[in-house]
Length: 426
Image (cartoon, rainbow, N blue to C red):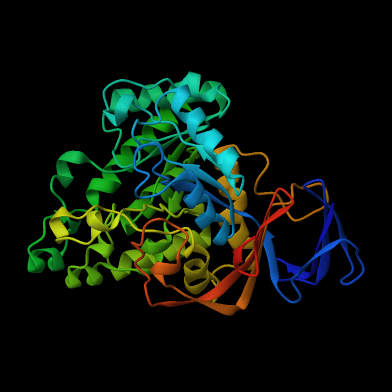
């Protein structure tokens, strides 16, 4: 079957017909000239399908919050064609058997490429290294390893993990949180936390771990990825490390690009997240760092929770926010509309770079003949009103409820097959 994405503008440039056959882009033809099954995209913008390096799909174990299928649906609706599923499931994805289970569930859903992330330590316990080699050589071919949700706080263990993954060009993705400095922490440590009577989470608890780990990565000559940067100080540590030639990459979440700690004053647990929402000054620094390339990618940290885990008092509420279906709109609002990023630069940060970091060779390519046809078609003039009750996720904990975001994902094409047409699952 030949698929024709008609009249679309790759990266917002001149209109073409993108012609797809057998899952591959075969031609960029003059608009209106190609024949085949037509996907109407007149005047819309085409980008490589988005790649999320940081997604929580909860399966196995917490299917009440999310499943691989429902998370894949949310991802496709958000323009994603690949997601990396974090390891903090139950059982933890710390063996070849569990990562293969997640990978096969993704294959069965068939909506996006689901790439399991393997745990660094057994049971996320931080004491013994997990079976990294077995996971890397499994059918899932794991290349990203993370205890996300918990920090690999033992420096010796972290060094060993960094050394071990070099054998198969893997990367350790660190959740930077010094546990002793964040015991019982509820929000960003600031004047506001004191006024609200909530235990503060100091910025240095994140920055100290990043500083340690970039030095370890430099020492052993390995790749380090830093999850969800949230402070201006973290940006400066990463900037310094890159200037030294350390092989470090970093991500920022959509919510840390747009939301601030002031929202915590409502005591609404939807704003409780790990790491916490920070100050307006931190948000400004994160936007600048994403624009100048110090921060490499946007990653959603999509963290679904069932109603009973979020709709409760602040101290008891789980940490985390939904992100897959709203990531593009937040990125457009904070980075594209103000002119901080061009369409090509946005594609680099939401598709090409995360695919490269995660070692996914079938994702993140340019929209050129010969590339796998993973395509997000967006309407830059459209808008998206966030209604949590209409999200594909099984959970409803979106911090953007009632908010209108710019831009709208109209079509998503995964390996040449439309998974989203006219903004709805195909």
